[in-house]
Amino acid sequence: MNVQEVNFDGLVGPTHNYAGLAHGNVASMRHGGLASNPKEAALQGLAKMKALKDAGYPQGVLPPQQRPDLGALRDLGFSGSNAEVLERAAREAPQLLRAVCSASSMWTANAATITPSGDAPDGRVHFTAANLQSSFHRFLEPQTTARVLAAMFHDESRFAHHPVLPATPAFSDEGAANHTRLAAAHGEPGVHLYVYGRQAFGGSGERREPKRFPARQTLEASQAVARQHGLSDAQTVFAQQHPDAIDAGVFHNDVIAVGNGPVLLYHEMAFLDEEKTLDELRRKMTTPLIPIRVPSEAISLDDAVSSYLFNSQLLTQPDGSGAMSLVVPGECEENEAVWRAIQDHLLAGNNPINEVVVKDVKQSMRNGGGPACLRLRIVLSEAERHGLTGRVLLDDALYGELTDWVNRHYRDHLSPEDLADPQLAEETLTALDELTRLLNLGSVYPFQLD
Image (tube, rainbow, N blue to C red; front, side, top):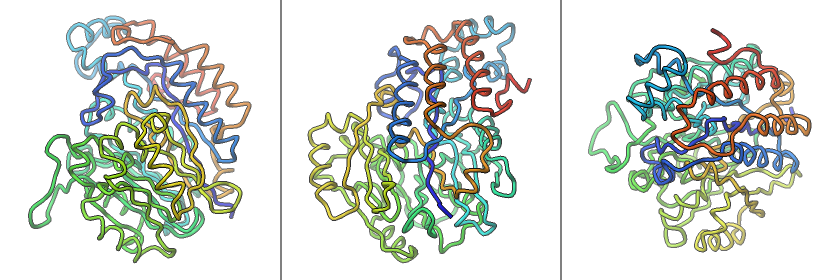
């Protein structure tokens, strides 16, 4: 069936800024208030996409959200013209203005959770957009995300879209950043590893939960998504993230573990019950699990968080050899302990990883997102790829047009004070309107629907 994994990267939006909104995300908190470079951020993201496409990996693109979200400000009581709404919000509630300008949708690992057709009982690809209810600036995303995914994956005979989970703390859902599919190959049956930070209901005995930072994903949300997609007990493993890792800044599982094919690369502090998690994976997988455990002696939790080694993309090389490449942020090369561990534990180990590729995504990293945050992995057959609506699979022509679009519409300097500029809002709407035509997606943004 020529099944392939397509990485759909989020285009960085024109309002990319450092507002420090994400509590528990150490990099976001550390860089809050600094000036950003939206143009550089978008071009860095496109360069990563192009490099992977040129290396033979199928690559797709997802558009950013409409920002600033003036509708959200109006819902919160700000009225008048766009300029008046922005001015009053900047004066009375600057924290809300920063939130409605967030370009956090660039981290599409949080956009949704996906089940490929080969694992679903009805033979369709299943989508659930994440509710992202744990933070206001991300709670604004799901409705547009769901519209975009429905526009791109429109054929109901091939694609199934489920309701966003209830936006309550009990069903806090952060998407594929807490989900990993493990299988012999992309086209083979898979086991879905869902990692959660806390349990909302039931359970017995003493619960281990983080003390410093919130646990964003709940067990109940992960279970609900698995039910929506028709997955059986034999296809799923639910594991609790280690609370100490969350308190160290590991706000999502993809900051401490990454899987691909039968390989699970993880830090020893990734799971609260490491042995039980691995045993259950081994029991349910139809192919031997290849765990790559990185001990704290090699990489501390602090170094893991600052370098984002585990927020790298782990990719099966397209030559059919089964070998894998690890796409890491430049911060890994700059950290002596991490770079040494890559050589000693990964490249020199008995595992499929034989190549490490370094990419500069500093604009994203300063806000707390590495290479893996920037992409949503979707396993698609050839027929499903042909069934996509719109022009969303990257080729040289689309890359050139997107690069030109960024250069024409994006600013190269954006401070927190600039977010109140009504001209920025106009620039953004103009850019997004052009983008939907460029991608042939139709009307997906609120301003287009209105």
